[in-house]
Picture 1 (cartoon, helix red, strand yellow):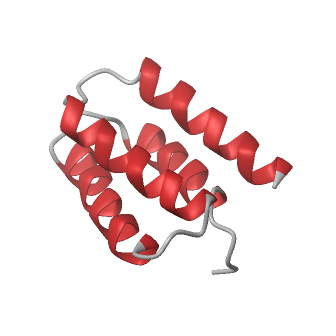
Picture 2: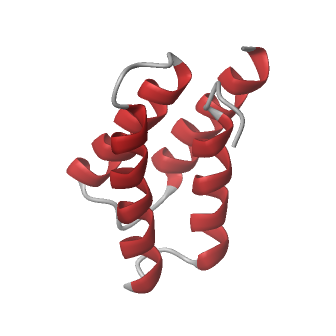
Length: 83
């Protein structure tokens, strides 16, 4: 849980310092992180929605590929189940 909590904290920090994010996009990513961290039902669905948000950020050029890769890394790191 400590490692997953570290990813969660890093994700929050990355989102706080990431420009170009709309509030609903941040909320979507954080909802997925919460669901993964606490192994909530529907985690896969919220993860897919967050992945879509990150993809839009990258393809639109609002965030760099490297920033999006870090967001993905920390988001996936919140997950209790192995991928």
